[in-house]
Length: 128
Image (cartoon, rainbow, N blue to C red):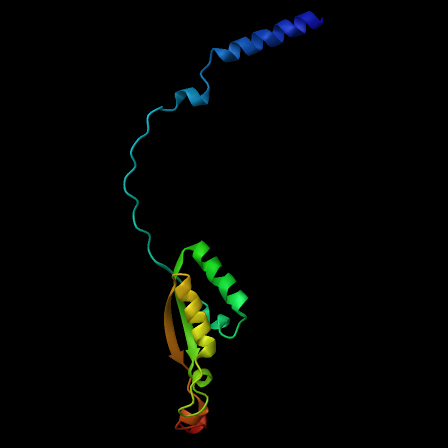
């Protein structure tokens, strides 16, 4: 019985050898590829969330953006945060994010928004 099983197995394996393997059907010469098409720039909005974050968090976020192919970061910059009083400027937290982005090759699209109370001509929105 064992001899019959071995013979059947040998016949089955011998039969497989006569069929080409998938690797045998692939071309052996390389085909030149066309030049790659440049990719569209990828941008994200989210830089505002990084303002005031720990340097390690900002750096890790920039590395993640690099991994995703991000080349442009939109960042809303709250005017009241960078000029809390007329003529008093504080760009430190914003600069930390911008500097990290530059180190990672990411451009910033900064949007200055929101009006500080000291600059508003009307503080009662119902009457303006």
